[in-house]
Amino acid sequence: MDGRTHGVLRRARLCCHCLLIETNHGLVLVDTGFGTRDVTHPRERLSPFFRALLAPDLRQSMTALSQVRALGWSAHDVRHIVLTHLDFDHAGGLDDFPEAAVHVLAAEADTAGNRGRWLQRQRFRPQQWPRVERWHLHRETAGEAWFGLSFVRPLQGLPPDILMVPLPGHTRGHAGIAVHSEGRWQLLAGDAYFHQDELGPGTYRCPPGLRGYQWMMEQDRRQRLASRDQVRSLRRLHSRGELEIFCSHDVAEFERLSGCPFNQA
Image 1: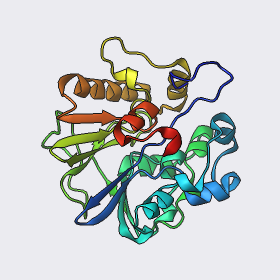
Image 2: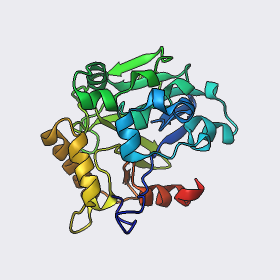
Image 3: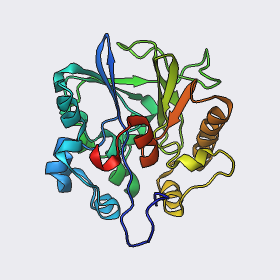
């Protein structure tokens, strides 16, 4: 499942990689992971199917709110939240920051609001965001390209060095979030891919468990593969000194970028 845990009876380890950005406009949180209420009331907030399948390690210390407080900030200091998508493991902490403006692609909000199919009712959990009052829904716009890809800018209230880059397929409104910092761009590609070896170099590979999970969760296979190939092209054409790419769930990528062993995060 994760490409580094050996044996089918041992638990694999995935993460939910979030970003906290300090700007002149206040703090910006990119994705939220699970929230405090997911930890205290998982049966009410998370579907039985995904609790059984993933057995998430729900700890208060690992929530975005606890991590923000550990840095000396408060929930009030988080002015904006920018989401790759609205899956339960990315949006669970939204109601921990009720004063924040929440930015998401309009196509994602439409998809999450249309929960007719069984799997969509399991993955999109409106009970995770009842306190959100300031939704900012963005539509993909034509114009200048970012590294050859279309992007959404401006994001109301945010500096121009934070972009939403549509990467649909995993969900219909899925996006990568690009951040310009210290002379280079970083792209949190969300769930456009799940494992670092999907981007190479050389032979592309993905652990079979993750490959099956991506297949199960994709809303549009053609779009998902096209988005993954776009991210592959970015990695192939641009050095890490110019553009750093990482996804939401790869532990090795998290450890490399954070400089922190996953079990000590």
